[in-house]
Image (cartoon, rainbow, N blue to C red):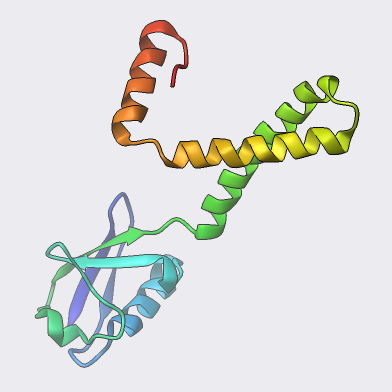
Length: 145
């Protein structure tokens, strides 16, 4: 049977699959057409994610079915973006705090301790906290925790 796989914001492709084929093989076919690694694919049919290791017949797909493809952002990209922002903050803190300490080693220790505490507090923020901070920033152009 022929099914269409469409990326949520873009391209689509048609692939020929059998009822006995697995979701893994479907992802491989999609990877060949759309150049998206199977590990970054999340294929949906009628709002349900097709699970790896299952067969196509388990989802009652029929000829001409339309599947939706959500593309996952690569973990390495997300991690590098996060690390890049943290590194910039850490470097700027080091520059500013260096004037107040006798050695680079002492400055580095304080900056590392600050970054650990800062990250812990950021992870503890609720969505309400974040919304309140953003509202204050929009209203007064001032950050307040």
